[in-house]
Every structure is written in structure tokens, then in C-alpha cells.
Length: 114
Image (tube, rainbow, N blue to C red):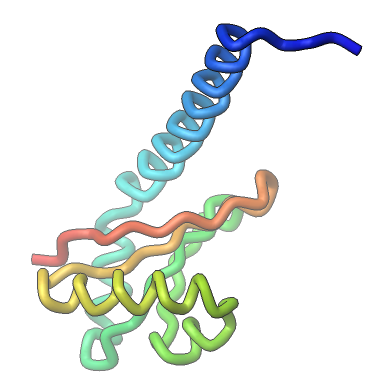
């Protein structure tokens, strides 16, 4: 059995954190390229204040009713989405989820609308 010293453990954590940030940045870059499409789709359903989903592999934008989207999540994710959605409404933002099926990632952020 090989023991990992404290320095190696810190370096390993830093590397994992860095990979997470790189992954998140790549997802945000993909979404920023689709900003116009996300806003256009949101505005088509704006009266319902939908949650948006951008599927990276499909390169498609979807608009979902908030309640239906939330109800498909586990309790913890529902609480997080509720807070994010309510704050986005106050700030005039859109809640956008980015889905990367290959990496099995689902991330969310709030996007300025106007």
C-alpha cells in the first residue's frame, strides 16, 4: 500500500479542482456561443418564465416549464433550483442548464436577459 503525503494530497485536490473549473469553463463557452439562440427560445415562451436547457451534443436549446423541470429533480436539486430561479426572476435573468451527455454533466447558471 502506498501512502500519499499531505503535499501530494493537496496537489491532487488542486488538479481535480482545476479539471472541474476547466470543464465548467468549457460548458460556459459552449453556452455563450448559443446566447442568441437561448434568448430567442426563451422569448418565445417568456410569459411562462421557462427554465432553459442547452444540450451540447445535440446543439439544441429547449424551454421547459419551471415546475415540470423542477419536479423531475431530487429534493436537494429542487431546493437549489428554487433559490436560483427565484433570484433570477428578481434579477431579470434566465436559468440555463447545460447538459453534456458524454461526460454525464449537468450544470446551471443564470444568464442576463435584457
